[in-house]
Image 1 (cartoon, rainbow over the protein chains, first blue to last red):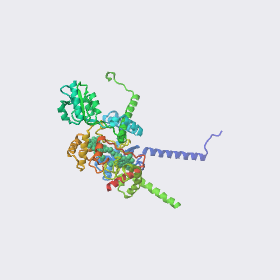
Image 2: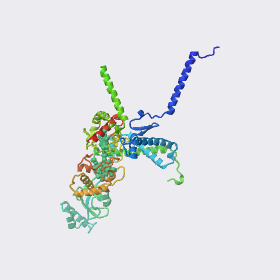
Image 3: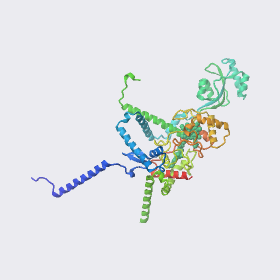
Image 4: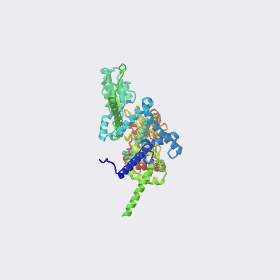
Length: 298
Length: 233
């Protein structure tokens, strides 16, 4: 029986093939184990360097030059540039080493910085969710009070000190009202009809402060008065009759959507970030195995 | 025929070479190289006309209806006008939603019920807004009708915390994009009405981010072009 074997020429080609493969492997291995990846031509323009494929940003580098030496790219010396670059590469390498050593598990500063970093990653996620104009308009309508000016009023709140809760007091107030509507000045009216300011409103008041001082009944009446208008005598929650004379009323005024649009966009994104943050927290919390000591359960 | 193809080929190769150079040269150094500056101009001018003029004006002198600043007057909201500063603004925008955009502060709206989203600030009364506007006009050398109002406005400038962002001398803070209030080119107009409206209702101007929408060489070219033009004027 013929033992199968390679013809002479076949053996030679096999040898050559094996040698070629070995050299190839060797070259690849050499390249792999000595790779530094520092070829400048592969670094994108917005990076000053990459370290293990991670970017060192040009803008950070320029800031660092400024912060450390108070120089710009043109005024920096070669040594200054090299120092800052070396520092930044060193930082990148040490950061990686720090992770291997589980620094984040130990150091509170590192932990804070990482929490901030995750939050800024959330901002990256929010970037991809650009709202449509219709979504913004809906958000605006939902939060109209945010885009409205605060209401103010300057008014006189009159009572009749002689008979604050009785029919005679109400009559005096009604008469004062007729005089005010006829255009008599307030001091003259006070003197003539024996009525006085209650003191509940002192000067110009923000709506919510006025509401607090006047109580709901009076405030609701005041809110709708135009400049120069006088109410009828109103019995308020304090049991007394009041007459409201509006000097200047600035009700809250919503700003048009077109004018408020950029702020709406900012607010929308702000809330989107909060929502994504909450979702991220919920997701992690659901996946996590958390046990709380019974004795301290809040 | 062949000849014109060769010429076209050479032109394209030259252009590629210049694009590579404009990106691989330090931004600030590139702005000192006449050949690159010329090339930057040829890339920047058409891009500015088609993408930026709509807001910043055809002459780049700004447009108060958009709150878009003059880009060549040498006054900068952000940074000090280095090519890298300008490039960062163009690449990532201002309050654009890009997570690297410039977005650290807004102008609060002082007559709103909650003037500021980022932290608590107290509202002001309409009369106080008018006083502040009078103070700002006076600071810019325009005599207000009512000098008592300007004096009250000056006091308010401190108590309403305007200096927090615009600084005590009102020169502005380029780190957060708070403009100088001693401007010759106002974002939103120089009139008392316009200034009052900004203080009353706030502003959050938006410049879009262009990274990914314009090639890196074009963005760099625009930054160099704006840097050079604003230095020259």
